[in-house]
Structures are given as C-alpha cells and as structure tokens.
Length: 74
Image 1: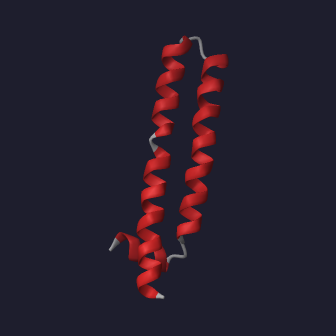
Image 2: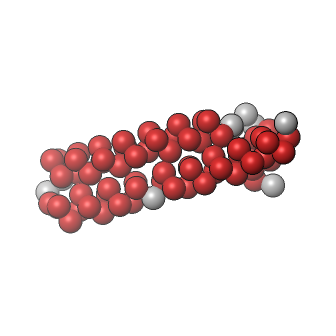
C-alpha cells in the first residue's frame, strides 16, 4: 500500500537506490564533521555516523520493494 502510494507519487526504484548511495557518503561526512567540529570526541562522532548509517538499508529496501512493484506493473 505504501509502495503503491510512493510509486503513484513518482518515486521509482532508481531514485531510492540513488538516495541510499548518497546517504552512505552522508554517513561518512557526518562522522568526519562531528569528529572535527564537536567537542564530544570520537564517541559522539561514532553516534552520528551510526545514526546516519541506518538510512542506506532503509532506502535499499524501499528500492527493492519499488523494483518488485515496477516489475508487477510492467
């Protein structure tokens, strides 16, 4: 139901895969930025990196669901 809604709104599997790949880079960037800027040290940087690192799996999973829906539609 959610996948159909997103598909009808124009989201395709390649969009989700692109966001997943970008969020991997964002995870590394947030870790480095937190390490350099915030006074919390490595512990705080690790928490930021881990938090953002959960996003790629979500987007890859959504991409898989959309790809299956696209095959069923096509």
